[in-house]
Image (cartoon, rainbow, N blue to C red; front, side, top):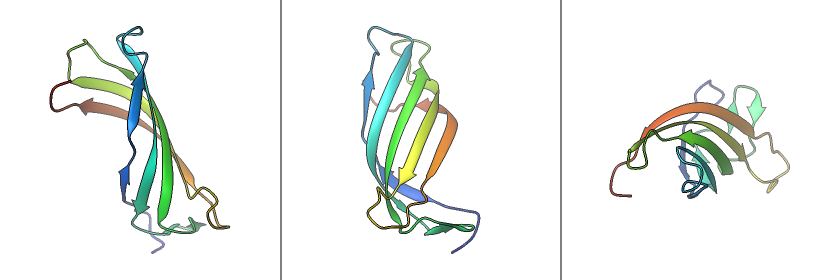
Length: 103
């Protein structure tokens, strides 16, 4: 349980703002829950496996109708002080995404 790998399953609905007025850039904000595959990352004790995730994305879409976007996402994972051990973690990621279905 103290390895380097950590996997998660999360549900974090996101709202997209400034899409209409700020095209081709957009901002996406969201908050939700996540279940982690382990309680520890090396020596960091996360306290439990159930956590909360808040995230923000600054994205770019090449055209209004394009299903593709690229962006920079910042994600904070924390147990929200539900127990005393709360050594959450942050992730900064570059993403390229393809959206399936009609918009």
